[in-house]
Image 1 (cartoon, rainbow, N blue to C red):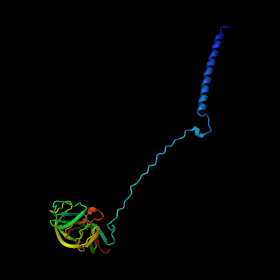
Image 2 (image 1 turned 45 degrees about the vertical axis):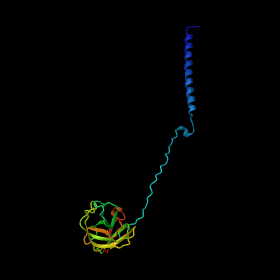
Image 3 (image 1 turned 60 degrees about the vertical axis):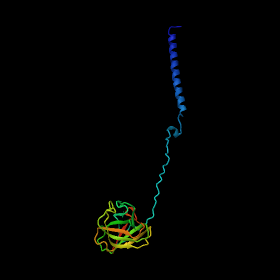
Image 4 (image 1 turned 90 degrees about the horizontal axis):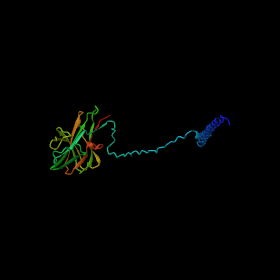
Length: 235
């Protein structure tokens, strides 16, 4: 045996080890490739499938609209007619002389001494057309009735719904109209006041009754049933 034989044997062993490592790496790669599906004809296998999450539908329930019965006549006036609603109103009570009732939903009338209740109403006719007025009607809605007559007077003095009381109320003026006895609650009543308005501007009225039981008239705070002054002319 020569001296170079061990060196040749060592080189051979090294190459065997390197080859074993390479084979091991290649086998691992092949096994991994097969495990993940390898080459596939299925397009779905080549790209991930997008997942879509569907949110539950949200259902919105709108509140129902309730239409209330309308007791007031239609707001649209006929040709030759203009409806003017009260701009201020109140009532006074002699049994409570310092009480202010300018923002109540009703105007109370009563004549049962020492308790006397009277109402004040103001209209503004400044928007009346420049025409010859041929008729003027006061319309009231009766909330509660004793059946007694309602009297309409002029007002002698100044007043305001914000601060008028029985102690500070103006005097009751001339009688200019009467709604006869038998007034029915839950209905409109009217009285002819033709000749009351001669020039555009504020119109003040006093309401009284001779009945000893209370009558309630809807005030301007009641909304649709507010006191109204209806102007008539030839269109």
